Image 1 (cartoon, rainbow, N blue to C red):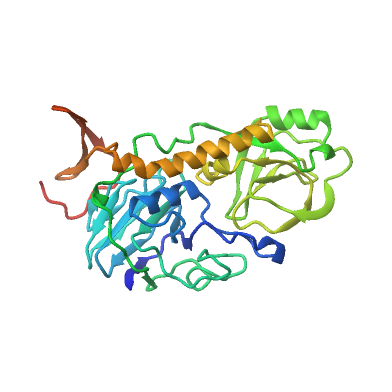
Image 2 (cartoon, rainbow, N blue to C red; image 1 turned 45 degrees about the vertical axis):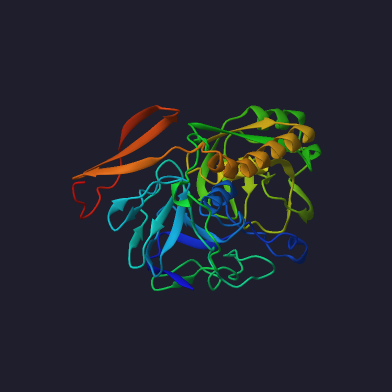
Length: 362
C-alpha cells in the first residue's frame, strides 16, 4: 500500500532496518541503521517488529505527504517535526491522516532521526535486508537516498494494540550525548601492534570528531597513537565499531557501511550500544575511550537488550503518562499529566523550535 510521497528529501534520507547479517564473508557491507536503538524504539512505538524498515534522516529531515491514514513515530534528535504546521511530539506514536504533510526540520542536539510507520517501509528484500547500501548502490529504495517525488509503500498492518496512539518513550530513556562522549571499548584484535605508551595514549587522550564522517566511519583527531613497527597488517575482517589506526596515529572508527576487510591495525572495538550513541555525534564532539573486559562488555550487552525488550511492558503496565501539545498563537507548550490513585500533577513546558505555520489558538 502506498503510504508516503516525498515532497522534500532532506539532506540524506534512506531506508534502513537492522542490516544484512552474515554477508560480510561475501564482501557485502552490513549497512543498517546507524543508531539502531532509536530505530528499534520507533518501531516498537507503532507496533512493528523492532527490525522493520524505517527512514533514517541525517542532519535535516524530509517532508512527506501521507497517502493513507497511518501511525508514525519519530525517535532521535529533535527535528522539530510538524504535521500541517502543528508540532509533533518526538518519541511518541502519532496518527497522521491521508493528505497531511509531515515536515521534519534540522536536527537539534544530535544528527540522525528515525521515522517508523506502522506496517514498516515496504521495499524489496535483498540478502535478507531492506537496508540501503550507499557505497554499492543497492537495497532500500532503488539503492539510493530518497528524492522528491518518490512514493514509499508500507507493509500490511495487523491489529493495532489498544492505546498505541498514547505510547511514548519514558522520560530519560534515551540519554543525551553531553559535552564529552565516553566510548567503552575492548582492546584488540591487534592491540599487540601498539606500544604500551600508545595504548596509554589511546585510553587517556582526548579526541575530537573531524568533519570527515559518514555512514562508513568517522575520523578522530588527538594525540597520536604509537605503533610498534608500522600500521599495516594482513587484511582481515572489520567488525562494527572497530578502531583502525593508520600510520599518522589518528584513530578511525568504522560504522554501518564500513568496508568488509582492512589492512590497518585495529587497536580496539567499541561496544555496540556506544556505536549507536556515536551515530548521533557531530563534528567537534569530544570523545574519550574507556577499557572494558570482554566479560564486562557481554554483561553490558545483555543489560542493553533487556532494556529494549522491557520497553513494551512500560506501556502495558501504564508506565507512560499522557502528554499533549497545546498551541497558543505562535507558541507551543507540552502539557504532561502524571500520577494516579486520585492524585495527579499537571506540568507545562514551553517548546522551543520552529514557529508552527498556519496554527490557530486552541
